[in-house]
Image (cartoon, rainbow, N blue to C red; front, top):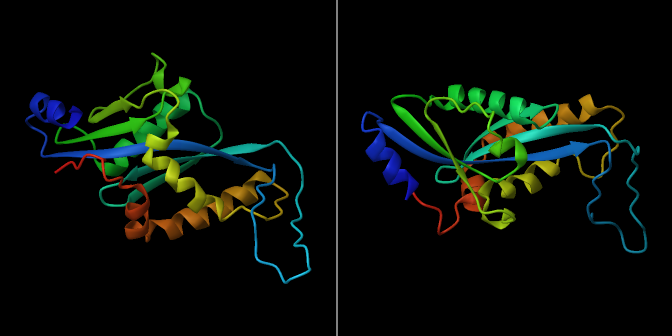
Length: 188
């Protein structure tokens, strides 16, 4: 098990935590969901068709329900490296605290140029297995903020996402219940 290996390799580390990370693309292309409507009345969802995108990076610690969010303009090796650096600072990863971060095999995660900060250890899921990624369970929660809404500019979507992500910071128990699979290893 990776957690035991890291504890053996880094006996100076006081803590070893297990987190998961994923990215979601959101944009001006409408996200339509079902809604309740009076009998006999068809609901209307207005939208502006557009192809401008923003990316939400979601980090979750399933054991506790802690989350960390970043809204960034794209996904690539350079931006992923920057996201890792910001995440490492936020959680205090380094010599005394190690974080195993479970990610999928997206090209920007596996590229040889990825700069992994000290204290962060990437663990890759098998290819084509999003059902194993706890962070995938975050997206229905964040999508609530942008579904069935009309946005003229990408900045409006980003503002709605910021509001929603701030709300979700206080929902640790609900996030833990969604993401802490029964087979997910406990770091303790």
